[in-house]
Image 1 (cartoon, rainbow, N blue to C red):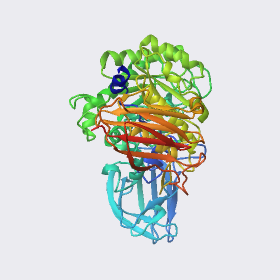
Image 2: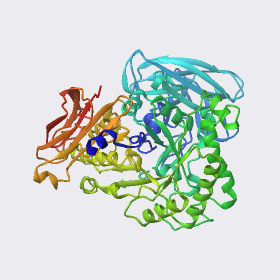
Image 3: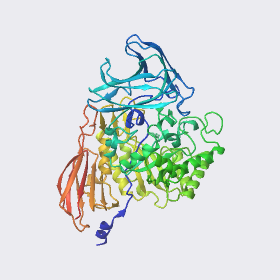
Image 4: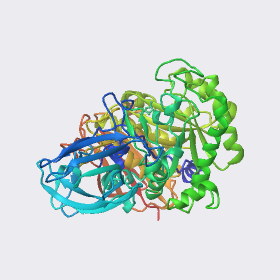
Length: 632
Ligand code: AHR
């Protein structure tokens, strides 16, 4: 029958549907994914980052054994104009143990017995004699776990490196760096990395956090924000060019989330990470305006400026075009050459580019967005540009944003919403009525305001609707992705971490089950919930997709309610069903969460499943079930 034929054909849906959104928020970058163990390595922290902070935050003056001298932060003849502050040690009497400084990392430095650590620092001699410098990994009580020495003997800035092996494990070690002779020396970018980074990249990422992200098998990664991108004034706009090249030449800046960005994890590292985890990069650039949601009125000019002046727009647009060249251009191009110089001659295959984040759709925004959009479309028709429609569907900028995107025929717009789980259950049909001929949707940020199983299941139920509407919804990403315990600026998050642990939430497993079981064709009318009560029950949803690469059919069943239900699964439209299928379930009590103390409370369980062309399945209360069936 035609119904059966339809079932076999299905409808094409976005192959890039489920991805991730990484924002440098809640110490996601410095003190998080970025593996640097030293906090404020470049002495660039300042009170604008956070009240009470200064160039010496994270450091302590250190002298053991009767040595004395002075320590100061200076700016004359810096290592780089982008990185003006450095520390000067003036040792008057070195004593037994030398005079120097100590860094306690981000809540301590984790060292493991037998592991190697790469130390590096820039030094410049300010007195005539060469100065021996000792670097120690040390416990709180002074136990030395490993050390190295070098002799600073250059009147120009010079980089010194050493490898230190830790003899003991300690979760709260510190790095001590002391001069062991009288004299004056300048130091900057005092850095310590574990030798083991994700994929062994230099200037790399923390392997455990990176792996948890990689295990989501995201189809794309949006970065580096969020609000971080447009900042809270035009001086705070994230400028990608400030974040590439040698780390000592990058421009650091205040993080809008009340801390500091070293830019050590910069655009090159983001692109490299995307490639390493098989995710398409989705960089987001500000639409030449900064956050208008953080108070204040729309103003152009003067202090509190929120839009780039027109005479800066051409240069800004050039930065946008240069990013595309940096990612994809040949090595003979100016920016392609910089990528090659950084170690990646091949293209990063940039396909999507976000412009703007939750911006107010004001005349100033429209004018600037259009200038950027026109320039990108003219020069790079191969790039799919993602526009913005404000912070929430209930805000006035949402309608205005959609209207504006329609006028310009922006291919994709970025919707955001953080709502209660009940909202997600009630709004399951949201995209069923979307006009298919308008801009497509990137649901760039969503979360149901909690990390309990019920929240995760409300999101799962909603994700089946995203699959059903995968012809109009191109991409979707939960937000925020990762957060450092004790330093969260936003809750809830998908993954929590400390220096020693990574805790995926229940929501994480939902994301993972959907992203590792994506399809590129959607089939309707495969699953039905037949009993009368089920018909009106918004806690029950299902989907059926096919992954063309493997030929596998994937049925997902979500029960976000407390009563077991029966689902009929009808696969009679498909030629062949291999009975040896697999089934993965995520279930428990509605309030159950994964915590640092109980990280594996709710995890998926996989078992063999005997599939048939037609079967009835008992869907447990509070559960997500993924049945994966081979068709060969
Ligand atoms: O995900 C947290 C924040 O929520 C993002 O920075 C912003 O885009 C949204 O308001």
